[in-house]
Image 1 (cartoon, protein in one colour):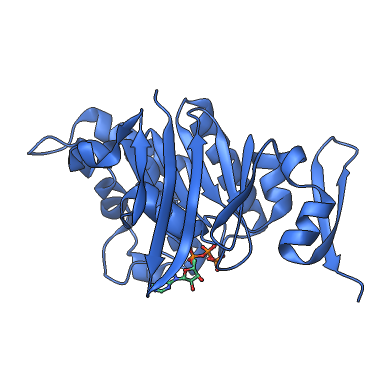
Image 2 (cartoon, rainbow, N blue to C red; image 1 turned 90 degrees about the vertical axis):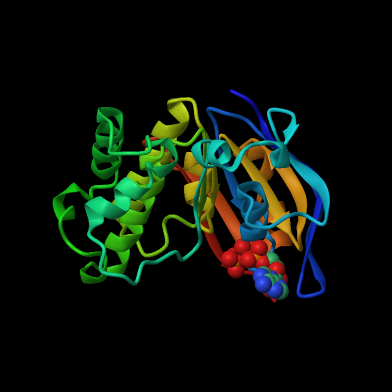
Length: 258
Ligand SMILES: Nc1ncnc2c1ncn2[C@@H]1O[C@H](COP(=O)(O)OP(=O)(O)OP(=O)(O)O)[C@@H](O)[C@H]1O
């Protein structure tokens, strides 16, 4: 599968440059965590990759071809976006909503067995099958967030772009979601995930892209990017990085001494 990349893109919103110029490439079969302080440009970058924003300069490339040269249906099959803080305010039942994720794949009429199986897999992976017949507006915020993740997973995109997918989730479901992202990458898809928890990023990511003020200040292996010095310079917090007896990496942050 081909690489997804941005080449020298800039983005202006409200008359202000909020991104770039930035160049970065994302590899299939890997989890890339996009990190950075509030307002760094993480969502803007994902929106450019997903086609919600058109860069003012530069281009988004899919397999070396400009994104703009692909048909919309083709792009919808290849790239799935879970937007930040997405929600649903209509009385749709969970199974119907998740099945909408198959829309780019479905024949003109009806659903195929492959559609049904993809929806079942997505609901199992997100622990949402047990409320398949309930309406979205009758679920808690975290339950709705998991259903929205199921909808994107049901589309089995070659590129999964997830903007803060752990928001509103309890610790167990956060870990399940991180494991699910790893599974998606293991299956060969490219995963690009925006995270705020540096420890989660250290554990889930093969690679980290660190943004600050709309620019990429580092991209590489988690241990190489997330050093205490760089965390201090980027987030203005002190960080201690360690390893549990089980070999799990963790980061503890604290206020910097004044
Ligand atoms: N529609 C808009 N009009 C003007 N400025 C915008 C708009 N949307 C975002 N911005 C600005 O663009 C910058 C980048 O925003 P973006 O949402 O990409 O940041 P982020 O890194 O995802 O932040 P967060 O961690 O807070 O979600 C911010 O300074 C924000 O204020």
